[in-house]
Length: 222
Image 1 (cartoon, one colour):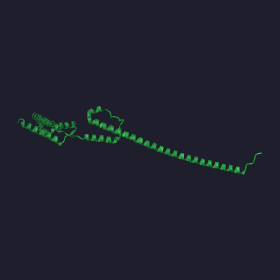
Image 2: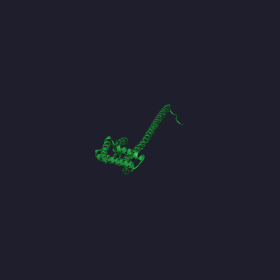
Image 3: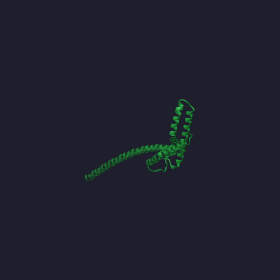
Image 4: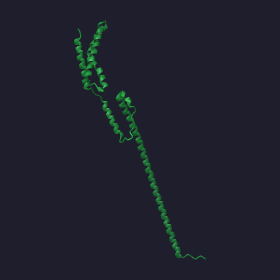
């Protein structure tokens, strides 16, 4: 027959069972705490990763917009440069692509190019080296106007009626405007040199034309 368990041994077993139960409960609570901490950390990591993805997508979208704006502005400035050069601008071809080793913000660079084009767009005054051409314009315009006046007078003398009255008047008007006829070719010279016909060259052309017209009238046979 089995021997009866002593009360001391039974009490020791009860204490041991209680200790083991408490230890299991503590380990279970620790496991739950660890699990909760890991879940919270994972949630924070997911939240941070989601925010980083959102920021990265926003930065990528902003970068795409900047690239499109820079490309459009570069193409516009390139077109202005080709138009400024004129016929030779066709040799430039299409705008160059971005440099692989380029660094820095392209916006200030484009702003500098725009300012440079704006400065070169403003025409200046004709240089002094163009004065002989301006004098020739004045002389040539006066000669042409004088010849037209003579032709108008001759036509009036050879005709009758209204032409005989109107042609001398037309000849007088042409003669009076003769010193200013040279301004037309002078303007072409200024345009070809991308310059402005300021009062100085205009006075030079008109003065040369006036002197020429007076000499022609003085030397004309009476």
